[in-house]
Image (cartoon, rainbow, N blue to C red; front, side, top):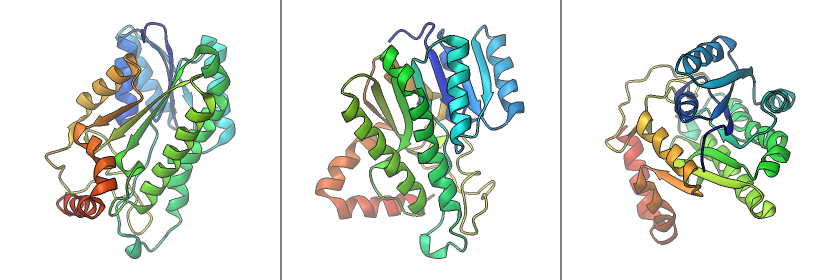
Length: 266
């Protein structure tokens, strides 16, 4: 896929993977539409991209609200007349054993952002994506294919998104391309500080260190863009995550012990 003049809508574009994708895609000639909840951040990123000669604009969007997702897509089509790529990069995580959670209400927030919000965006963008034979890119995680200690609600929301997009791909029969990015721990994002803790509040800065298998943000984003260009259906970052489906099928107990060990070493 040639990215020049491709119209890319990116949710979660105010930070982390979404922000980095917006910048790097614009440098490759894509026309980027930034979606996030904070106008100030959208404006800051827009100015940065345009200083580098990129083309973009921002639409203040809370993806948990269906009408705001529809407005995002309507604004994009009004401006650029089409959508070629929808990148689902908005997400929020958690860190707590389920039995220690005192306020379970944040599970609603996890599902609203990680699953329902993505569904809202896909539903609104689908007619345009079909007309361009476009691509849906989900910034997913290993927790979409296997359970993960301290991430019960997060894993559930990512399992839901995986199941939805897998089913949609079957239904559409090639009318739209799909790329699922299965990500491990990525350095340089705010996922950890914004994660929900056992009291239902954001955890803030943490002393937990990244493991040796963690991937730098720039490396991660370049791999995602490469996968978009060659139109892959799935990419694992780091590559070791590719072993999870096999290990889960034949060595499930071993895999879960390894996951527990990895989590508790963080």
